[in-house]
Image (cartoon, rainbow, N blue to C red; front, side, top):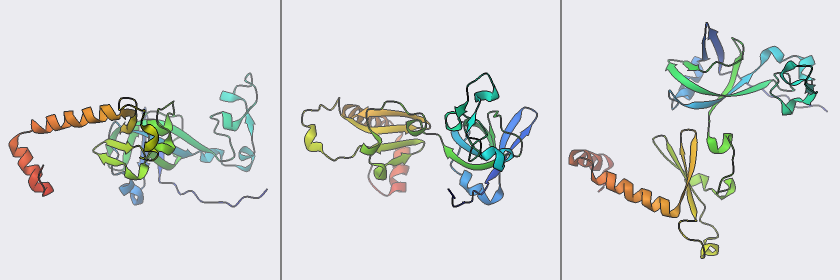
Amino acid sequence: MEFEPFKIIPVGRVRKENEKTWLEIYPEFSEAVEGLGEGDWIKLILWFHESDTPERRNVLKVHPYNNPKNPLTGVFATRSPVRPNPLAIYAVKIHRIKGNRLYIDWIDAHDGTPVADIKILVERLDCPKETPIEEWELDIGKSRQVGEINLIPRKDEHLDELEEVSPDEYNAVVVEIGPKTTVLTAKELVELIEVLEEFYDKLPVEIKDKLRRREGRSL
């Protein structure tokens, strides 16, 4: 079977010096880093260029951890660098950002390994677990981001089927704070709104006046 090739453009390189590991992002992609912060967790996608040979890309089974005592296993069930497309994925924490350098946890990639892409780590998607709201039930298009908080409401379809569901049983909104995810019921959502209103009322008058002028509306 013949496949149509496609191109992956490296956006940077892995760099290592002594015990430090960082991502050196190429200047033409520097704007893509905006929004990332120190302490953020990211999914790092690398291209293991040293495994990019016809021989290695034809290997479909390996001994896990390169130990012949382990049974031959399909590469899709391992993290071997030898595979049809030598992509590697890591979950790492950004410890420091300096210019176009992202200092991260130590990883076993070699110095000079091309960086294919970087994505934020989202617990709901990248660390799947049983959740009370299925992905298809979320109204992604109406998500709102406030600071580092991402709020994803549940779709309002089939509400006629919920007559027997109480507010403390109905899961209303997914709350993502950085990589962490939780779910609020309708009752908890109302309680949160009440708490936020209470906190707002306690703001200094001067701050509320500035907010009103900036927003151009009555708060």
